[in-house]
Image (cartoon, rainbow, N blue to C red; front, side):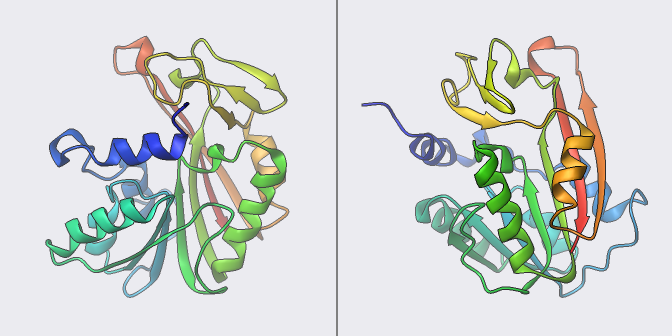
Length: 226
């Protein structure tokens, strides 16, 4: 029987800690601590990390004085990560959920971080539902900080579009082989969609090619305020 993507992620995050990325995203550090966007006030603010993985961004949030909340696709991942950070003295509230089903009250979060997870919604309808759900749990003037796969990312090698925006991953060295994702085509497409749900939207880009054509990183970055 084919292993589901959820089962693959649970197995991935069950690896020993030394084999997992345990440092925050460089782009996210720059957004919060640099002068690339407006001054962000973080002390005692509520932040939700959707698809937090192994909690790689949590130490950054803790250093910024934020109250840390998270959503992942299985209770097992939530418990593993909660226990790991509890030993470090970092308090987290982690719940099972998805982009389209966030188990928190409306108007609760000052910030949402959706870092390379929205493209797992593989239909236009579910992308829209996810954005509505993000808006629902954000406070008025709350901010969404989002990253998603860009057109030149190496995950797209060997794969192809089966219809507009719907991409089939065909890299056999990636455990997401054979799964469908929703990939945006360009910055304007992102802006036009996000503007339906947020008052202000800014779209940026991050690209890295560290001497390996098989590991090119290309991301669309979005800052959107409710």
